[in-house]
Image (cartoon, rainbow over all chains, first blue to last red; front, side, top):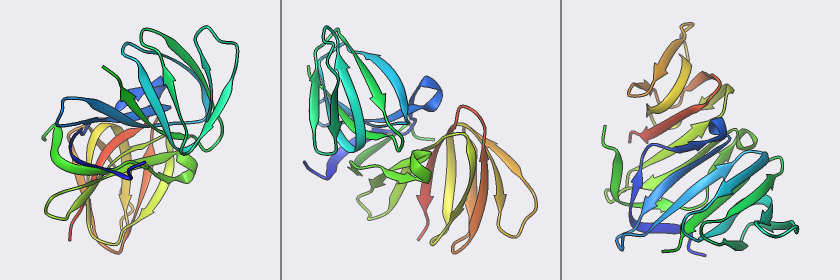
Length: 106
Length: 106
């Protein structure tokens, strides 16, 4: 897992969801792709996807239930999970929050 | 105020303070300088400085009291304030949080 993104652009203004409980920064790459680096406060959330996404855990933890499944799986730093496009996923974030990187697959 | 930082490096892992109530990402520039893009949840905080800093408001609001002053000033999006080096500043962040960019002056 690279520690730094090099030669990128960063949109200064945060993406803010759920009243600030979830915030992220958009990182744009030379090849036109983008990722977001985000932080989630403790809480329960549901997100929708358009493109498929890969969520990479940078810190903390989150429990994840993908659409169509009744199973909750816990992910911690260094682990990743994929979410299909045009889908949803539910999250439970414990105290201390969760630091993540979201990659949008074209 | 430029909307994007171009040709920069970003450290993936968040800087996390106050149990996640304040988080930021470090952005490194070609000239060796750095800034952080951060978000503060509602709350009261005190930060110390080493180098002087300029805090630029990207969203939300914060009330600020600089060391040695009894005066609280409110800053909102588009406004900035400077904090001397080797100093402290107190902050009160209202509901909805505060989105900021911190520049470290050498």
